Amino acid sequence: MLTSESSSPYPEYNHKLQKDNVFLDTPEVTEPIWLEPKRGSIPRWINGIMYRTGPAKYKLDNDTVITHALDGMPFAHRFEFKDGKVRYNSRHIAASVEKALLEKTQVPLFVGYTPDKDSWMWKAPKMLEPPASDPAAVLAGETISAVSPVVPIGSGSTGEDGDPLVVVARSSGAYQQHIHSDTLEPKRAFKYGELDPQLEGMMSSSHAKVDPITREVVNFMAHPATGITVFSHQPKTSTTTILGTITHRKIPNTTTADPVPIEPSFIHSFWLSPTYVIIPEIPLRLKNGGMDAMQTGSFATGLAWDQGSPAYLHIVSRVEKQHVASVEVRPGFFMFHDVNAYEDQSNLVLDAPIFDDADILMHTHMFGSNGIQSTASSLPQQEEGENKMNGMTYPPRQGNIPVCRFCRFWIDTRTWQLKEHKVLADHFEFPAVARPMQSYRFAWGASGITPSSSRGGVQKFPQLGLVKVDIEQGTTTRFDKQHWACQEPILVSKPGSDQEDDGVLLTQVNAFDANGVENLLVIIDAKTMKELAVCVIGDFAATTLHGSYIDLS
Image 1 (cartoon, helix red, strand yellow):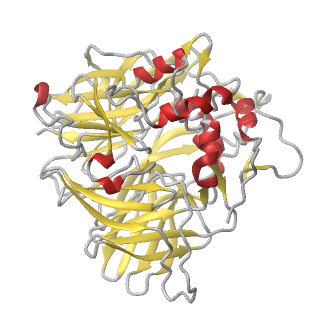
Image 2: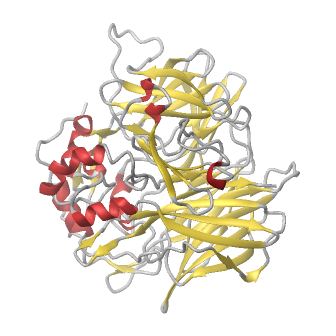
């Protein structure tokens, strides 16, 4: 169990850490433009739309500058592929949040940026309940999808206003955002509680899962007082089913008379298999049930790593519609994303990129920044010995970014015990697979490798490339270029092919050099990991965290 100090130095430290951070703003491209290949050619069989989203605007005016990489105002990006051509547009999807910040009438809950405390405290209720009539008054730019989106009845359907698709920008909070599939204009903000009254809560996963067979969307809502409610939604019939509620740890063969309650924890994603939903309870706790974050206006300031505690994998049966077991995993680990989950006879196989601890959170304040070099002069000086802030090492050592390992867990579904744990690859995050919820051979992801040397007090940042992992052969194939920062790969499988790696990877790249930066659309052969085409989007930087692709063929 964690103890929490009433006055944490974290907000003050955050200001010191971020005070000199400067990020490049991304311009809106509301009028679509056509992108021509700078080199190579776009495969003509790609016929669909890629949506991407991420932080894009940091300097709101001369006095209001956001200094944490993940807290820039979110943009949605749209890439439409047809006949070897690409049509591109983008839009600021939280313009009303920006306006309220400038007018000092509303302050959102940021990821890591710490707003002025005095102004935050009295405006917090307005953040929790933004104007219902204003679809641009929420921050919902973590993920974006047009694949089986969840939208309450009455918020707009396919064909409304000439809109052929339903696109949802998702957040990890209560509010989600329905946007226009072509113009990207926000249409409505809604909560999952509109699907079912039992889904009231404060947190969800922005990485909702889609069953590729049934097309059901699976997610959860979490509340410190009522636990975690797991649900599925069938868009075809607009029906919602409660799959189970997690309130206590169900450890098999436990001798404890009273079950131990779960602890409110950081949950960014989870696993979905044909029979089970697996919710991780990792030892990165929400201090005081989330109240620390509410007091500071920064989600990260309310998190603390509980060193030495295990992780728990809570198993919810999609068939029995209940929480059936909690699997203890020692040592505990930290994770952002899952890779895949499937069942193999009596084994439940779970794959994920994992970290040994939560130190990586201290590094996110500079995510996606200039990939060539950055001075360390603005960082607080490292004192002798090991320093910890909420259980995490500080200051973050830019030359020693924590390694993320692609790991596999085998769980025996007869005993609900962890059988085995194996590392499949190092330096692997932002995963993509061609065969979700089934046995597979290949996984693609982003990979950062930090140069081992630095000169003259200058710390070099990682080369951010893409990798293909062959799980059967135990090999990794890498794609990268000097000074390129490749972002999450979106896998597009070739229609009609039965080969798992027959397709392309779509990625957005910030290419830095001494003259500035270019934002690129790069297409890579998923089989060979060789470049197929490069299109210049513009002379600006654009950082996108996540995306999705919908095939229109």
